[in-house]
Structure formats: structure tokens, C-alpha cells
Length: 454
Image (cartoon, rainbow, N blue to C red; front, side, top):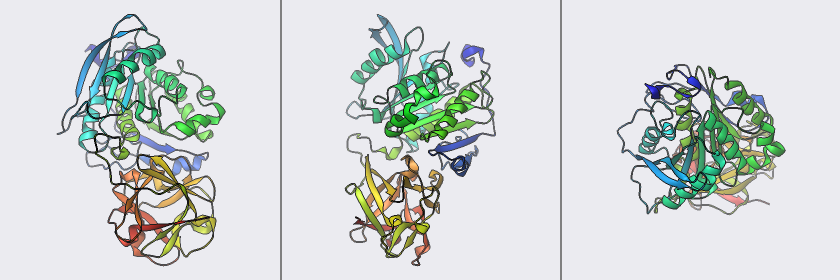
């Protein structure tokens, strides 16, 4: 029964049934917040289309998929001059001939490293096994350090990471490193993740303690300029019924990010306490946001058939309609619709293609700091396409695949893991015809040519 008790004398894990998740935020208007908020279902039939959201029922029960391995690993720490333990998860099909992204896990006070994987707490191994088996994430290694009686920074950077990255086939760069922590470990995650942006580009503090990390202003200096430039995933989460009182400070950090245009995700768990009812959903979302299956990590040749074009300005023409992708009304506003229209020299028909790695691109409008954007990051046929404040997360990431319709490309959406594409809705040909996301057919209405623009 001891394992059923959590830090700060917490009681047994409390489950809940009316969760609400708030999705990815990027810009400086509260209207944007309401536009991309999501009420999540938790029935076994629910189809999760937008992250972050509450998981479906049974997400943390091991499904009919291969299991990874969770192992206690003992190493000598030059920091403490003693033998210490870390707990390491290696994914199903693990091979030393492949390379894997990594997440470093940080537990809370009066706890231990296995809690990152214990099913009553964070359940990282079961959740990862299921998501890998479902084809939703890349195989990933997770390393949980012992955060007791040690300087967290020194042990992580000078002992745990050097050992893990010399003994396991980890892709040792910031784009492929994540850090996840709950409670006291969430505070450490804030401090170490945001304090070392050349080491971690994926950061997930959950129910973070407010007293062991810098203030919001110090975590995000210069209005978060470095975070905006470097971080790929920043997921904040907390339960509204956190009995240690940590919801207000975590909400305040979310609001600080909103006020300063700092791209991030916010998972507010209605009725969630200071326990696994928050930390497991955070783990489930973080794995998918940080290392989705479309991420194209090099794992021995298992690459997608993506192509790309040189960075630069383009006009993008739909093959079927013979009309150009443009911002409606030539107006640069967040949530402004995107449509097809006859050729013109307007700025609303010019798009800057930027290769961001892993076969992905973004398309920035010439009308200002706006990017082509799938509304709400949904993975649903018919989802509208718009422009939105540029922040470059999954709803604004695309890939190009060669089309059979001449010298053209299918523009697939990364929020659908590349299964859906930009589509001339209803095969329309009139000026003002709408553009949406639809399951890939590679037909002429999903084929686009890129013409260099001055």
C-alpha cells in the first residue's frame, strides 16, 4: 500500500470523469485561446484528433502490443562519489544498431525513479508501448534518474546523461532530447529544460512545484526570445483540484506565455489532483507531441518518402482548379481563411517555404507573421485551413510528396501524421473556393505546383 501514497502525504490516486484539455497556444490574443480549446471525450470510442487532450479510456492499460523493457541500471556517479540507480525503458524491438530519441524523467520529493514507469503514477512504459504499437510515436528511450539527496543539475548533466548517452544508442542532440518531471521534478524540469535550451528542445513539467525554479520572467527572458527560437515542444499541465495548491502558479505560467506570445501547450485537467490522474495524461500527450511517428528519426532506413524544395518565396497553384492558394481578402489576420483564386500579384498569394528538418516545412504568408495552419491541429476530413500567428508547431507543419500529376506535389499535414493533405474542397474551380484538409488521394485536387515568386 505504500506505493499508493504520493509526495507530500498524498492519498490514493483519484480518477475523474469530466476532463477538459486546452490546446496549443501561440499568440497574444485570448480570442485565439477560445478558438482552439477542446472539450475532450474519454470513452473507448473517442477519436483523439487534437493534442493536447484527455486520453481515451484504457490508454494506460497495456494493449495487444509488444512490450518494451524497464530495467534498473546501476552506475558510479562522479558527483556523489557513490553507486546510484537509474531506471531505463527501452522500446519494443530495441536494437543497438538503431538510434533513438530520449526522454529524461524526474520524479517528485519522497519518491523514487521507478515512479516514472509505475502504473499508479506516470506509467511511462505502458503508455509508450501502446503508442508505439498504435503507430503514433517513434520508439523512444526513457531514462529516469534518482532525484533524491543530490544536486539535480549536477547529477543529470554530469552523471546521468553522460552514462546514458554512452551506453545506449541515443540521438544526442537537443531536437531528440526531452525532459519530463512531475511535482518537485516538474520544478526541476522547468529549471533544467528552460535553463538549457541547447540541450533540451522538448520540455514537460507536470503539476510543477513553484518554489524550485526561476520566476516566469527569468525563465523566459527577453519575452521568451530564445524559447521561441529553439523549443519544439513545451507542454504545461496541472489539475484544477491540485491539493498542494500548485494549479494557480502553473496557470500563471501558462498565462505568462500567452501574454508574451510564447508557443506552448496547456493541459488543464478538470478535477485532477496532485497525482497520476494528471501525470499520466501529460505523459501520453508529451510523447506524441515530442516524438510523433512522422518525425523521421533515423532508425536504420525506416524513412518516409518525402521530398522538398529550396527555401524561398513561392506562389502555390492547385492543379485541378488552376487557381492559386491565397489568404482571403488579402488580409493578414489570425484565423483568416485560405482559399483559391485567379493569379494576382497580391501578397496574399505569396508563401515563404522554410525547411525545418525531418522532411517538414512551414509556409509563411507575405502578409505578416502568419503561417498556413490547420484549424485546431485536427486530424479530421474537412478541417478548415487558415493562417494563424506563426509558431511553427504541428498544425503549421507540412511535408511534400511527389504527385503523379505532372511536376507537382501533395502537401500533407503533420497534424494527421501525413495521412491527410491540402485539398481543393469538392473539386471546385470558382474563385474563392475553399481549401481544407482531407484524406490523401493524390488526385489533381490535392496536387500543387510551386512557382518561384519575387
